Image (spheres, rainbow, N blue to C red):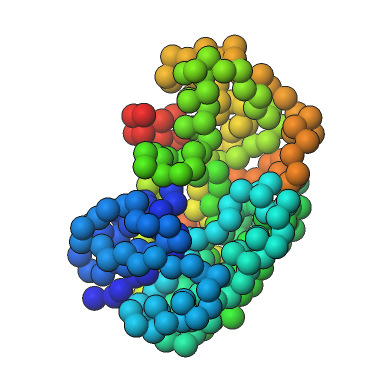
Length: 299
């Protein structure tokens, strides 16, 4: 029975991964996070873990001896990475190296969760073979994490796009919960109309990662996987309009604006999104449309 250790279990993606793997009796699941356990799954062991503490990571991995480590813990806010590069380096690069080195020491396989921000957004949607060219420090840090992961003998990389889902009990919101919450309060919001994505329903992403883990456990070739929502591309502004319409909220509160007018510290790639043919063929990955994701969320 393979043991799966998941870092960043208190995040949106980490929590969905815990839920997904916990339903599969063939795996033993271990959750880790910097903060105390927010998942509260009685049959899932939890350990607080600071991935930036090299000694702590090495000792925990050495004690628990997981067969696979899914590295979800990261600073994923692009503006935070841009304005605090030291923190970004510490968590996204040094933390990933600590995890990778601990995996090497015990012979564990590693799956690294990455992002569409490794691309510049000039030619999306992207397939796995396209050359990365990040335009933000966040994107660069995640690309460095990919390179670190690829130094292992057995690895997998899963890139994803604009993940949304249920955030009850979590510290951070996502685009859907932010838009819904603001409109419910009658707040005016500005949303970019020049960025296009294939937004990803968090349980779909978790399913794709489970299948990529099965591929990795089976000893097949090391792979990069693109796991996101399906095409066609949708603008972030149109996402907001769909959210307003689905929840019967006032869409006139949503102001479309150009990305440049926001003056955000980190640049965002204008058009990303993923071509999913590889995951569809090999992982039986079948993601749902954005509107169906809203229906399943039932917020």
